[in-house]
Amino acid sequence: MRLGEKLRYLRLMEGTLRGLGREMTQQETVRAIQKEAGKALSQSYLSQLESGARPHLTNSTRMLLAKFFKVHPGYMVDDPEGYHTELVSDARVMEDTLDLWLIGGAERFRRDAAVAHAMLQVAKHDDSRRCMVLLGAILETPRLVDRLMEVLKPDAVLEPRLQRERLGKRKKA
Image (cartoon, rainbow, N blue to C red; front, top):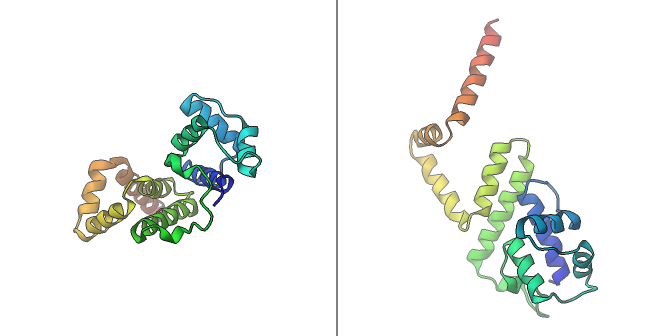
C-alpha cells in the first residue's frame, strides 16, 4: 500500500472513531492536528502526500502524523514491492477484523449513542478480543449485568425503568 492510500485510510478510520460517520476531510485533519498536537501541517502538504506528488515525509512530519493517528511511525511509508498483508500473524488479523467490525457496527448503531460509544470503546482497546470474551463471561453470570449496570451506570438503568413506567401509565389512561 502506498503512503497516500494509508493516509486516506487513516482519515477514514479517524473520522469513524470520532463519530463523524465518514472520513475526516484533509482540512479537518490538519485542524485537529494543530489543536491536539500544537503543530501545524498544511492541507496542501497533506494533499500532496496523499496524491503521491510528494512521495516522502520529513521525519518530523512522520512522527507528527503517527502520533495523531496512533500508529507506529514505520507504518507511515510505502510498503515494499511484493509486501502482502497476509504475512501478519493470524491473531493480529483476527483482532483487526474484530475492530473493523465493531467500528462498522458503531456506525450502523449511531442513533443509539450508548451502543455506538460502547462498540467504539471496545474497538479502541488494545485487546478488543479480550473485552469481548469478558463480555461473554459477564453475560453467562446470572444477574451480573444488572448489578454492574446499577453500580457503573445507574442513570442508564433508571432511564429505561422510567420509560417503561411512563408507557404503562399511558396504556392505563
